[in-house]
Amino acid sequence: MDLEVLKREAALRAVALVKSGDRVGLGTGSTAKYAIEEIGRKLAAGELTGVVGVATSEASDVLARQVGIPVEPLDPRPLDIAIDGADEIAPNLDLIKGLGGALLREKLTEVQARRFVVIADHTKVVGQIGEKSALPIEIARFGFLSTIERLRAILPSGRLRQPGAQPYVTDNGNYIFDAQIPAGTDIASLERQLKGTLGVVDTGLFLGMAERAFVAAPDGVTELTPR
Image (cartoon, rainbow, N blue to C red; front, side, top):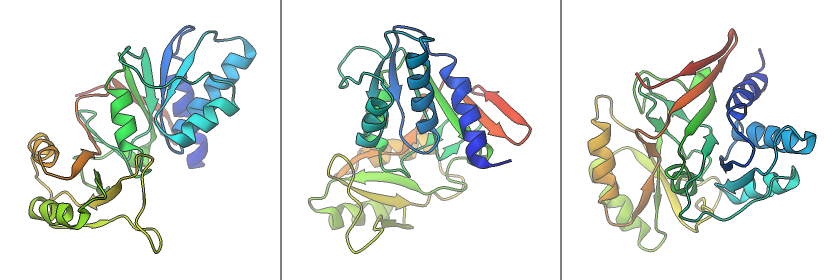
C-alpha cells in the first residue's frame, strides 16, 4: 500500500481524539500535514467547532490558515492535545524528531500538551533510538564550528546539515548538526550531556513525552502505548 495513504490513515485516527473547543498543537512534516488538513475539513463541515491551533513551524502555520484553522502563538496556557510525526519511535515511545528542521518549536509546543499523540508509518518504528535516524541537534550560528567540536567529543560521527552551498537554517535562525548515536548509548544521559553543551539550543530527543502513537502499516493502523 502507498505510504502516503498509510500516513493519512494514522493522522485520521489521531484527529478523532480532537474535541470541539480544543487548543491543538499542530505538528510539522509530511504526516502532520494530513492531520492539519483533516482538522480543517472537520471545522468546515461543522463536525468540530471552536478549535484553535498552535503551529510548530511557519509552514504548518501557513497550511493551518489555508484550511481554515485559527492559529494563535504559543503562550503559557496548556494545550489540550498535540499531534505530530516522528523520525523514530522506540518501544517506550521515546522519539527522534527534527529531520524536518522544526525540533525546537515542536518541543516547546508539545511539552505543554496534556496529550501528545504521534502519527507515523511503520518504517519509523525501531528497537532502540538511533537505529535508523541521525539525531538532529539545533545549534547557535555564532561560533558554530566551536560548538561542533564540543559535540564531536560526545558524538564523533555527525555533520552540519547543508543541503546546498549554505548550511540549513531553522525557523529560529539556527543551524542543525546531525549526529549518529552509537548502539548501546544511555539516551537519557546523552540528552542531559547534549543540553549542557555550550552552543546547543536543543536536541531532537523527545523522551517520555508521547502518550500514544498511531502507526500505519499495510495491514492497518496500530495504536502503541509506552511499554
